Image 1: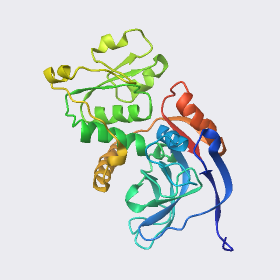
Image 2 (image 1 turned 180 degrees about the horizontal axis):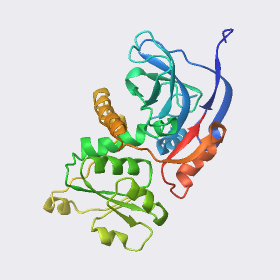
Image 3 (image 1 turned 45 degrees about the horizontal axis):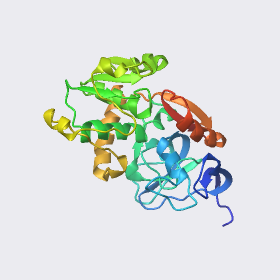
Length: 294
């Protein structure tokens, strides 16, 4: 390693497996931004369930080993590449993706995946925007093509994508119904839901008159014909660069107006990342976005 190379703390994964493969290293080289890249000094990084699937090796997209997990970063621009003219050192930003990984003190990102973070939101809230809000926006506006006056049912509305979907749907003029546990109902109502149903109650679906399912389901296609129903799958990874820019413009407007207000859940220091991965999958379904603090 070159003399004078700046080092940082970062989580590294050298083999796929359980949370124990997340290794904290103290001597990882700080990446240097080139061309249209920026280097972000990370203040907070969101934890998403998909990162546990990737870490375990069971997900369809596998990174080259070793790698650093994490995409939803918020922090301050530390340095910029020669052609990253939209940002300067000191800018407060958040990301929807990283190149080098977000579970680290510094993260490298392409400039088109980085957005200005308004002063009214703190870094923890900035780290809660990425995957949840972009996914919710893609599902509602791009895929479902919702219209004002329609109704939307959001299962597990107290979760990361659920709360984002609730805020977006309410802002776009929809009637928002949600399912959550008793203790989360108040938070859900504060974030835009018109009504909340307790998913721990027996036959709670009967009150909504909507069929819902979180696992496998068997359907009769003829039933979709009579109601002209649609079943649409959504993945954020199919989003184009242009679509990301469109979604970002709408979400940044929400930050400025005030309807986009990320709810923060559990918070962990970087060295407790294995516990965070364990809890995000096997926990009791805590409200809000899980965050790593750096």
